[in-house]
Length: 344
Image (cartoon, rainbow, N blue to C red; front, top):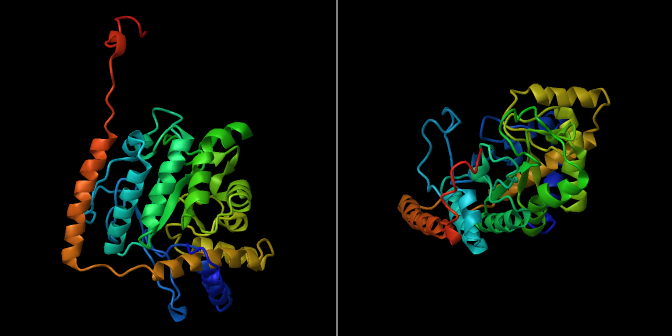
């Protein structure tokens, strides 16, 4: 979000005018893709949408998994392709184009880029991730985020952290020693956050060394905010909130999607019981408010004719990006095909 302190001051002023109930409600979604707002304070709900391969905006009432109808959008090469190009400026161009499509569709935050490491070749989402190299992934991510946010739209970089498999992803416990975490699994996020200041970071489904990422004060506060000086909002992965009260206390600002008010009431009960301080809720509500204010400042959607022209231009960009992402292997010394029986 903005680098100066004025939006923070305005957000704090608005939070001071909220009731306790309004603050608790603001920290969860209103539906599958939308945040809540507070009309009397001029805070409107905003839409978040999927996006690593292009904008995947689904209107309310659709299946949310992408099997049904999504709005027309450019299908850009996957993260694995962009990483294979080694062209950071190409990632920035893709980000700018994607940000323009978000503006055209009134999307405030795109849930991208995805920058986890490719630890397991069987991971079902490896195609979304830039690279198994943390330096390359971080450089691509920072450029991509800078491109998107230059259009007045936010990024939510994901999935923080060590989310490297899809199988059993809601319960798996990733055991990683500190050196490995710092040298392999965190550097791409560090580069993205410190180099581009995304509007949002998305917490991962998994546990890390025994603690769910959405509850982790080490990840969400000590590393992300104290070390890396992250100024934005932390949002859960969809349905990825383990303990809402612990999340508020430890740095999880926004729960998505809606819990139907269930977790809002848990927050209120925890404050009444002295298990959570209202000041801790104020911090989360202020960060959500900052995002709503940032989204309010984005450009209005262009005319329909310009939207159609934008899609044509972006289609050509996608073709060029796919061409630059192609990797040609040279069969030095007739290494291939491998001799029969070499692999058993």
